[in-house]
Length: 144
Image (tube, rainbow, N blue to C red; front, side, top):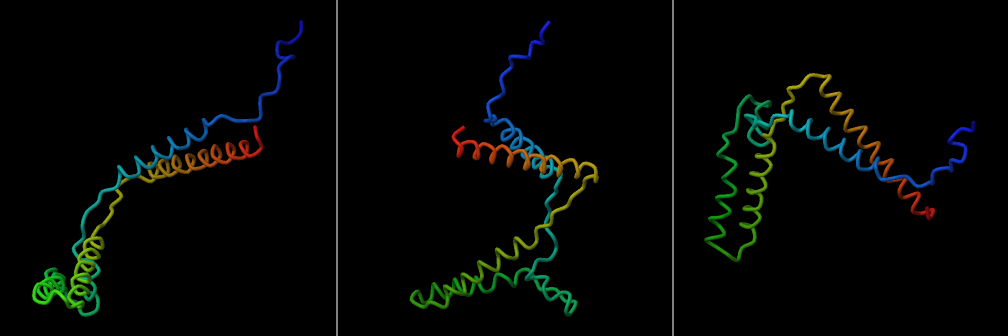
């Protein structure tokens, strides 16, 4: 009795896009679990209000960062043709944005095994996505 697989032809050289989609799914799952385990809070001091705290053990009031913005707006209302109030207002807005983002604190409260599992899912997802992406491109360039 002959084996059934004797007349079996070789599989075609092109691969399916399954590794690409599985990789994207694993990356999404890993990132979802990672982001779900992070708690975001705001700190007490930012870069501007807490910048001189370590030098002189004094803290700057948080209200002081509004002064350039307020002076700039008043100067724009007084003299609309001058350019320096616009720069002062822009600097005040930039200081407010920097202060707001510098107070953000990220806290991880997870076990190491869970973190390794999440990062492993993400890394495997990247590998499968790259494999699916480059194998598909190579086969398309060869005309397969």
